Length: 200
Image (cartoon, rainbow, N blue to C red; front, side):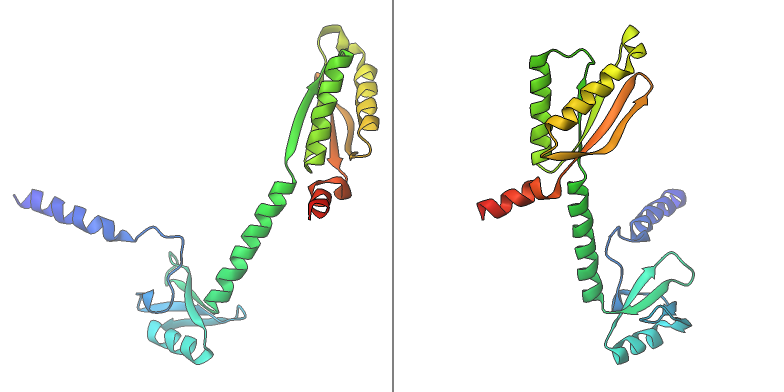
């Protein structure tokens, strides 16, 4: 009985190990006897009792934010938490926006592509560039074609010339094993941004 009772109490305690939350603990939610305090400008204040840290936060009209909860003692910083959250959200939004602009689409061609297929593939490249995406163009060589890299080079050059109004060669053709690769980037003025101004 004793053993089973011990086990049960153990299980009851385990969930209290700390709720999983992305939000740091701030002000009165920090339940530790002392913290290593960092000032608003990053200066080291030292290890202080939690009551003293909260008092300094109130005097400075700032929040006490736990920035390293696993340290011993935990590290807390004096800051304007509302402003910090806003700036973090803006940075994350900016990072997402930049990621969206660097989408790379891929088109694969054969050195001896027939005219109809070439026009179809070129249409895809045009569409991607108009949407503001970069295009990685890969020429795939097979068998004896590998001894004729100039065929791939000429094809890539032709494609670059055909879409030069929409994009520019960002990475010149280079051999990569059996393939030859070139990257075409969109001209800034010709992308979706320009279309937005037209539709506005």
